[in-house]
Image (cartoon, rainbow, N blue to C red):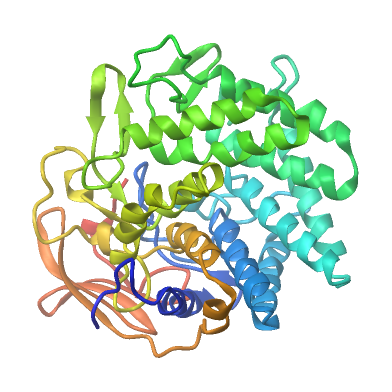
Length: 441
């Protein structure tokens, strides 16, 4: 199949992606392996109740609003039911740690699930569908658990770890966004003043000021321990701070949050490469870790650009084309370019790394949420999620082992000739075959 570009039928791109997402569903939710910058999980492949649900539910709601097709609202509720089923008695969620699944208490993942549920609540309330009550209760318990476990009253911010004085701006931003929406739905403005505003102020305290090196103005530190920030700047994670900051100005009237959001976006765009890709990490003194370069996850950056500069589609066009070109014949979108160069940071060798090719629910959700937001009503009405899934076959490598990646409706695999190195049947909690070469950190 000819790969689509930015001028192709976006409804077809979204239909193929929606069909692929359905192929990744198990009995209780969306499954699959997870390659990530921090570590990869190829040997746990079961359900993940993590940030994948933020983009999946949001994307279905975009389709429902644009098409008025109840099928998409049903899909959103089906995904919401996955979250509700996975909630533990203390309010946390099973398997909510993405690349560290099946661990619970994942950040920002549980907050992202709550945010998705609350967006669904707003839609259900508008059509007088009483299911909103149950989803609101689940989201409230998630947020309550997050605050009871992570809130540090001494600094008026959320820790990333209850036992370590720590702060991660992008994770806290997701929680702040969920708190604001919960406050609006429940008519509880003190949630904003007591929790969301202090979190947003702490994010701004992690942002480099106007007096910084001009190349770094607007950058947001990845995290801090105590009062010591860690001098790393991840464009993707900085982009994920932007929606909460922009929302902060909407609900408080304080311009400082919008100003911080605009400066953050300017930093992200400043470091976009001439070939419209985003580096993985920017360090002090203009040192850059270029690889791996995200493909599917660029949806979150595109969302941030659209949010702050809706009148400038030119700022998005080339990066949107980069994202869409990553769509595989199966309909899933590649995770990245350059995993094989993560250590060396030299030009990635050919063929691509297996982790580059693997489409992942928790990266594709970001593409899904963004692309569905671009559909006009007529195009949205043409979207389907029951297309034939075209098999994918690609030469690839992993740790110097050359092989072939294959995916179809039922499974995905990595083989070297007749030797099967990896075989995962979609929906299964573990792969049938996982050679030691795939035991990755």
